[in-house]
Length: 426
Image (cartoon, rainbow, N blue to C red; front, top):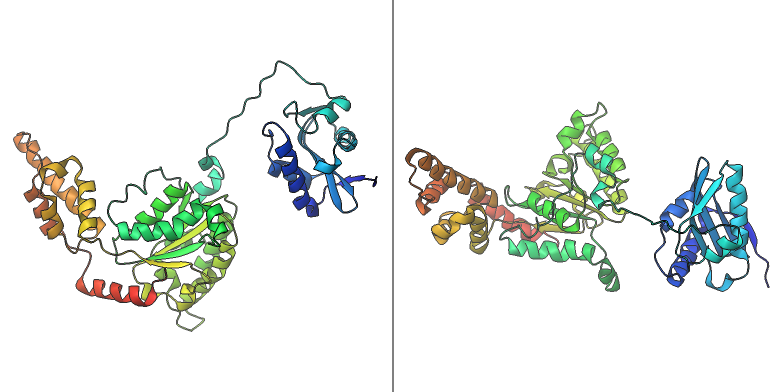
């Protein structure tokens, strides 16, 4: 039988350690109390992890976390073909010697009675404690990295924002298929060779819902939403916007998952003048350098929005940086009707919604929201004076529509149509 030897855990052991941990978990009845990441972190932090090797093969591993006179064994894992050969007991004996040298006097282990290592623990003098109940509370995902999220002004958005995106079904269909589904169905996407998106640009006239789409995606993914405001970043540092962007992206790298949103990105990624002395030149260059590094991490999504995709630097738009360039256009009649119904609420049953749809042809979702609020305010003020119990009328809302200046113009729509043909990438 080949001889095995004990030594310290090394970073190069990680792949094999995970493999034997998987074998152990499959053989045991019940989930372990500690995760493999906790055990590997303990191994990297000091002398509290020991492995048994046969040649270049990892046969077993134990890891513990010490705190004063108390230590917890986080992992007892043995490769399938090296069990019942005394390796587990030898590993525990070596671990105990190291823990005693650190001043530990009480060593505990928490695992199912039939788990791998239970017999080795008993053979090594560990006594089972009856009458104890294990309690555990899992904090919701939004509490992880809460300090970093808060420092960047990020937040966890409540569920349901995606479903609340009234109308805009064409845009929702594209965003869902290209962005959301590969991230919510990663195993299926990998089976078909679909790489999850890491960055996308949403473009269209002002007020068409680009920010709302970004927030809805974050809500759907249950990821933190962090919006970076270039003007705010520049104001918070004396080193300039380029340095501020670099620092912000460095903080973002510490999050488990995040959707980063930059609105009106043309302000910092516009076409460069070609002159290095141009202040915007360095900012654009910095952002171009940051995006590839951002893309290397899992569970990361950068969404940039622009009102003028044609003004963006061409290097910024190339496929290696952004997976998709998606148009978010003005709502068609069906979408406008859905948006009116959403903002009218209970009043929708008492007014002629189709008439409002026809009257608001050039309206964006933001314009419709404003007109709906204005019409409701008119009805409210009338009721305050007369107290007749009369609901808001179609005329109230039509008057509000007439008093609302549409965001869209014929020229803006023409330019948007041209940009769809020449710049969108779906």
